[in-house]
Length: 486
Image (tube, rainbow, N blue to C red; front, side, top):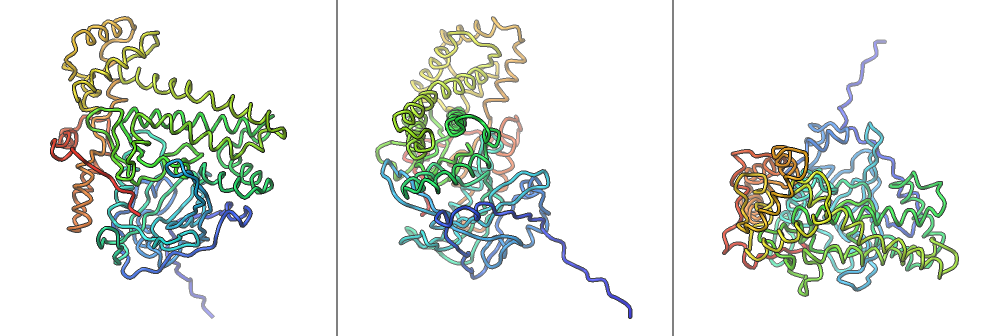
């Protein structure tokens, strides 16, 4: 009897190995994405899919169902993660109220990443929330996270946004959507605050060992590995926040549940990029006191890290006074580590290849001149790489040019260094809003596609991207506010 060869449909290429589910059950709750009425893939990140070793075309064909909630990718085992957090300084027990971790995908190169849905419906941790997300905020996260990646800032990534075909109620009825987030992990400061609040030393140690194995495996066999791990987390945050400031980014909601131990930027709710330079700049509608203002971000990062150290204190040493001393010693390294990263970045933006003692003062004088003149942060930095810098402070320009002359590298090399570290294009708030309005209200994705194309090459001088370099009209930028989307 002749056998027939079965033809199987090509697979996307998911390779799930869900290690977080093997941790104690207290750290998670079972969950399933809500079924949605009419899922439609709005945008799929083909380049990221390829980086993950996935079949991008097959993923795009299946995204509406598998990333919208009506079906699951092969191997996915969805859970809602438990965590806590200090939100605007106040401690709260939280958890994934509108997100599900589908699992961990292992790329062909062996890289492990979390795959999570955001806006996929209610979970055990939703409290009074609906667990849903609106299309606009999900597209904002897609746009800004991909822009941050192109800028060279460590960040979670966005694989897809799927419209649900169902409305969500916020200030008004809005189209619903689900975002697929890719992250090194979703371990947060708040994850450890949650474990510490349960007062279970076995749980805390298991979680810490898991985090070390996931992000700092080289420390596993070291003496005082938990202290070394604390220092590693501190170093990553010092580097990350310096990168934020160097490109004018304002996170907007630096609660401890939004600080990832991997050192990636996570949660793009009320985020924005600064136009006119002012360290006091705040865009978030819920940040009435300016806690998370642009210039406060380093201080808040250290505050969050103190909360992290408090949570893992029992692991640092059996004797509390010694544990406190070790934590304080590590935490005291943050200001110098941040300043080192910040100054190194400023030197590159000034075209400096070597270090002199007066470089910090030179950079701060430039920032002061920018603030006094109400200058655009991005364009003014970028202008230094041209023959006509946008700052008209002749005394400062003379000092800067003298400083350039004292290094062996030619001016052309300095200008190339400046162009490589001061972007020409950022996700200007008015351009982001323009793209979101076209997509959400008019179902026109072309505006967003053009913006994404410009943002993918932020350091290039491309003539067709010139409109994306223009600051907003004053009547548009004045009073601009962002919202968290929940």
